[in-house]
Length: 121
Image (cartoon, rainbow, N blue to C red; front, side, top):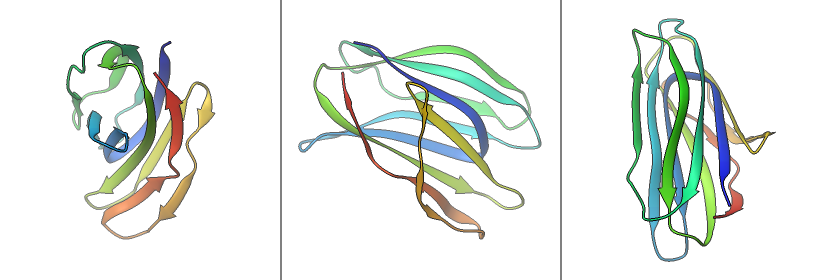
């Protein structure tokens, strides 16, 4: 079963982690800023873990469709936003449902953390 993450805002860095009771897996490390547009999807596919997707959109738009593979099983997904300074923006959805923040901060550093959500891979 594939799960789809849609990212439509990332200023400045977004780290996506899927974890179990035994391990964690970095899904993606996304960097963006300078008013560059962000609109792409990550399809979580069943299979051997392939490591994180690393995208750098600091000076270029981010778009497209990407696959990341995770072994079948039950996971919890969490997203963390890091602001390097200036404005910040984060928008992530899983299978069409927006990830809701449990932590926000107007300063620099870790400024946005999503509420953990369960997913079955």
